[in-house]
Each structure stands twice: as C-alpha cells, then as structure tokens.
Image 1 (cartoon, rainbow, N blue to C red):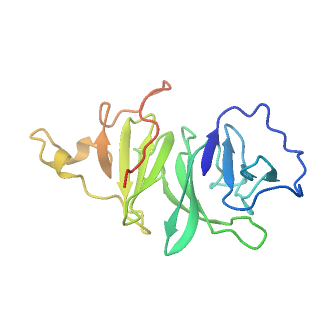
Image 2 (image 1 turned 135 degrees about the vertical axis):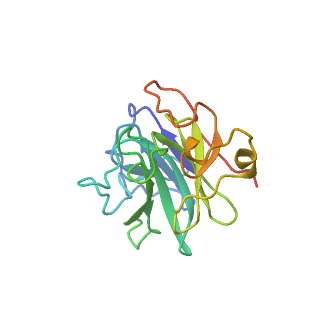
Length: 200
C-alpha cells in the first residue's frame, strides 16, 4: 500500500524504529509534500524508516522536489519503485531499485522528464499496463502521456487521436494518450488532471 500524505504536520519522525510489536510486510510508504524523503510504516503504525531511499539524489539534476504518486512495478524484470515529481520546471519520474538487505532502495534512473518532453509538466499520477508501459498524468498540461516499458520512448498516438479529422501531429505533446485541455498549453494555475489508475 502506498499513500501520498500531503500535510506534513502530525508526523513524528522520532518514533521508536525498533518497536517490538510492529507488524511485518506488507508495509506502507508515505510521501510528504515538499519533503525530500519517503517514510515507511508498518500496518499498525510503527515508523520503520524515515527515508527508504538509500542514495536519494538530493543534490544534482535528479533531485525530487515535489513528491506525488508512487507505484511498485517492473523495470528490466526487476521489481522497482516509481516516484513522480511534480516540480513545475523539473517534472519527472524516477525509478528506485528493489529493497536491499537494509530495506532501502537505490536510485536507478529517471524514466521520463520535461527535459525530453514538454508535456511532462507537474507530473501527478502513475500507472502501468499489463505490458509495463508507463502512463503518467500531468496537472499543468491537462494530459495523460504513455511510454514504452524499459526504454520509455513515447508511444504512438492512439486511434482516437489519429482518426480525428483535425488531427495534426505537432498539435499534441509526444506520447499523448488523452488530452483534456487545450493541447500544447502550459497552465500556471493549480488545475488539470490528477490521479490515474488502470483497472485490470
């Protein structure tokens, strides 16, 4: 279970990490708005770790500024953690490894970012289909983009877009699956697409 906890108040990071009555897996991960960490809890509320990201790249171009959705999925056949960053001018999706012996995860790579695709802007929701293709929702470009598994190259436009008589290839951001607002427009206000889930 993964929870995005928006309000950082009332979280006590000094809880006893060795609480003898803590339940075992599965565990709960929590992200903090404007925090640079992911917190791990047991299902009965024990704080197990105040940062499960072992080498969180908090210095440099891979820094996560605005944590949003998280997702457990596959990358090159490894079980990994995807994390969306909603920073307006450095939006991206980072991938972290499976847990090591200490229960922490190492940074692997950045799957997609607005450095490569202007449609990736204030990234919010994440989803994977049965083939592990990545879908991301973006709040400020009002869209859902999709990328091929492992390579993260943008997928072709779906028939619903390509068959539109007014369709122009350069009118949509690369990889657009669904456009809800005006294509190729960045918004400055807090509105637009939020969460996304694939119902299997």
